[in-house]
Length: 141
Image 1 (tube, rainbow, N blue to C red):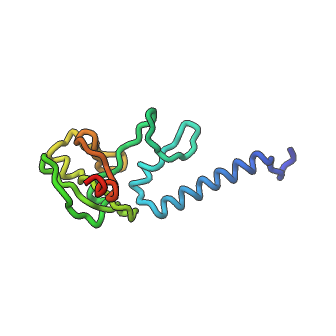
Image 2: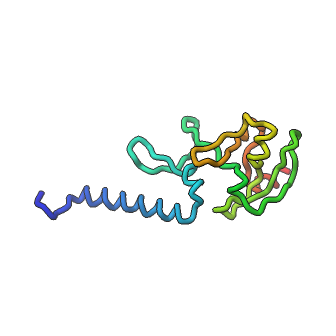
């Protein structure tokens, strides 16, 4: 191939790479940097993919760190004394019901881990709970 000409396959690859970069930039602009560690991972081929839990893929639990939440209101209490709260993540308008990692760490420290991003995460399964949206929680209660 002569110098200055680009193979159509190379052009397609460049457009895909550029599209990936633009998507990550848009995601970073509207997503708290701490969430990028949860939402994005790099597969062996180097492609950026969303972490979607399946029977063979384990995704890290979402952050439960109080520093990443807003509009917090207590809606209940577990038998252990840990509060159950309604809140929104800093980057989202979706309302969730869950716990605050700092509170869980005092009562059940084996249920809390620190992610690579420095934020605390709760293994809801060890608490006998699951993270729910407000709509899911109100439908069940």
